[in-house]
Image 1: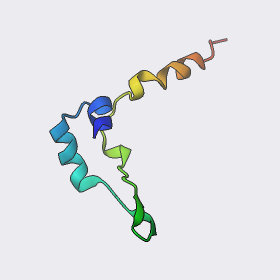
Image 2: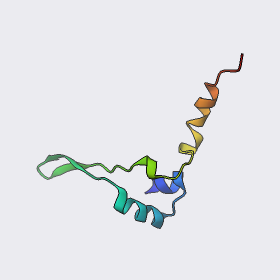
Image 3: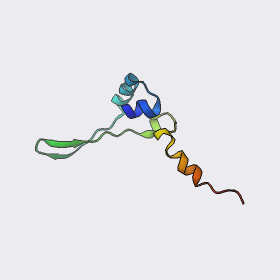
Image 4: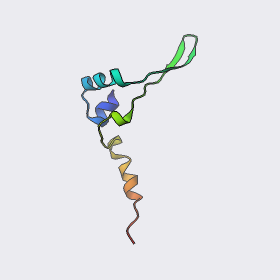
Length: 68
């Protein structure tokens, strides 16, 4: 939830309302009473936005070659 709030501008309530019907949460590694649950959400359903506070934009800019 915090990821949606921090990186995509959702309010806390909007994040809960968005995730509830859209998240896939398969159970995995079931062994006795211990289990693992993963939550997956399709990024294509999220609003377009630079994430991780621009962390990925800096290396992309540095890798740009000057014109010849």
